Length: 493
Image (cartoon, rainbow, N blue to C red; front, top):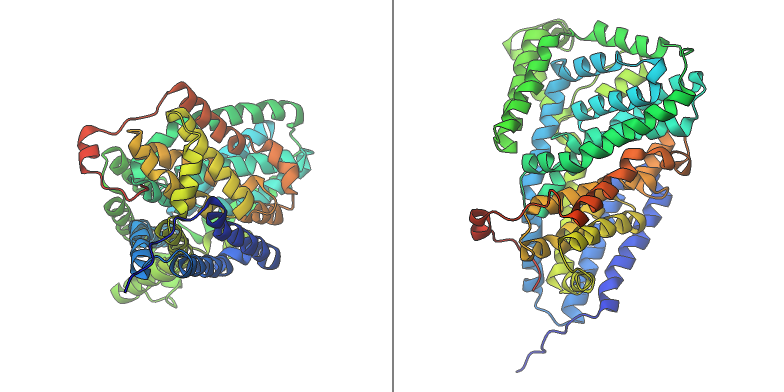
């Protein structure tokens, strides 16, 4: 008995799963809107992944076990990121309970100045987003208050929204608490803190130029007629519900020191979580007692910290803004993102296992002549996936899988790839109306995507700065000899 030799997929066939996925994702965005990433997109990825495996087995005549092994290998690449995300969920919960996040927000909001509203709004969102690791939470909470203040100053709401989003996405990119900041290095094959340090070379100039742009706009649109009641109300409620103290900054400073000392991400974040729990006992004993019907002892304190770590922090201050901003965190809050990542890896593994990803990657890589064009191809692929697949996670995962081996072949450190994935994959999603990022931010801020997009200076400049540096060959690091000898990254033949 003879067995059929597996076929090599054509470019046309390789595009079928991509086109099918894009169609389903667009349908999900239309039907479910912001809730598309809460389950519908995960199921779409799983369905198209299974369809791709079926094509590989039935049409291309590939052994099912071969395809399945690639899917399993693909999922294994995301396990470290998934574990870090779960720890980050616990860390966010304990940092809110301890008052660390409220304190960072409290002092961040106090830098608001009507004369320099646009650049200061951008900086304030940077601070909040870095402390929470979430651009969406920042724009959906503090962003709403800043839109109201901007309206009283007579500043066009598109400009205000652009400043808010620029700051929120810079903070998201640079925060070790962010899911995309953890996902990008996992896809590229580098570590979290090397990735963050390498992004400074592109994100730093981009945010500085954005602040200059907002300062110029603020010169024409700034004023002194702002009603600070919204900000003052937030400050009062934070002070009422938490013990605000500058000593709480010791924990994030401690994590920053660990980053500087190159301690691996997972132990650094676990230590940060434990420190958050300890500082909660020291600084927020009254809050913990109020969460335990006025009873505070070792048993109730332990139970509240564990509950916040796995289910997140919840507050009912009587103010929707504060409640929405601080009712978050916990390992369970990260499960939807972990689910999305795992399903994306199923889809990516199926594409790789059937040889389709290899065909598509080789078609793109034929256009690559050097490091500059490789980075350019990565940036373009990320943007096109945001434009077509309507999800920033796919804009990180798929190019990450496509180009990982190419960066190794060119002798480039994988942190170059992870930086490019974020420079275009994360930040451009908010510029596209039908992308989940664009749809969400337009909805919560009440500003049309095409109205604020021209003023999202950081989001526009980030990929351009990255492309410029790559074309000049600046900050493009080569693989270290010892790293190259130990590298065993799955890729394309």
